[in-house]
Image 1 (cartoon, rainbow, N blue to C red):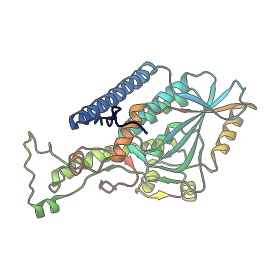
Image 2: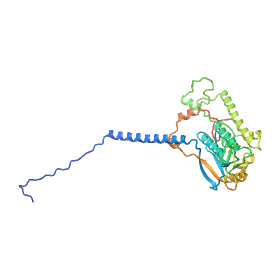
Image 3: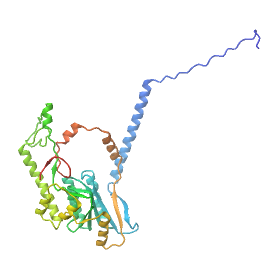
Image 4: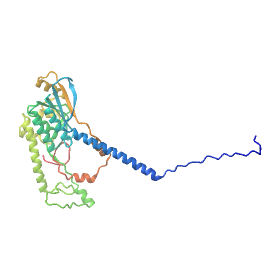
Length: 340
């Protein structure tokens, strides 16, 4: 025990150090992080665009499907799936061009699984297939649905090519459609009037906020009739058993089952893709063949766009404006102005 004469040493308690986090500092940090993320995404998008541009001349990616992997001779599967519209049209055309230039490809299986799409795009594909069939034999196989524009492009294989449909395939729907929505009744209820400034009486045709006039209906009738006649003529030219009158009887917009389309002469055989490949091999006289198909890798821009669209809510004003854009379509399933 220390003596009372000895000096007493007192220990000072430790000082508390307080770090104050300022709200302004947190905000600055968040802004910097957001800027970094945006910068990285922008650079990745630019790099993806550069890759797509730089590789535009290389064509699609080829993938082995079946047959003999080491065989020199190839059968190419050209797929037409989904709605026929940009940017898929350009990819299909590029695939057709690639197949036409590949000397190892001896024959083509045109695999259609599409409800159709834009009139102009369908005819572009049909035209390129006509050129391809002049170089290489072709057969057609139809999947779940090959209707309207999907059937139109199948005619590109020509009158000498067999068309296979699966037992559950839907085809037909021969006709033309221009989507239009009449919102004039709704506009009247909520007090909205269409008062466009225009240079001619047809300039705002298909305006959804007013009823279509008789003159407008007659004008669009002529446009649709032109596309409709082309559709029927394409079928008559490429289906030996059908003439234009017989095609006209089938061209009611009706969807046909596999059995119905076979009985009507729209297709040749009920079978699967393997059956079409075997038929083409026999036609070409090939015992060993490498069956290939083609694909295009999804770019970063495609993925970002798809993600943004998935998260977005419907924009009624955007849809209203787009409803005024004329789109002639060989398409199955749209309620709109039709021409029987």
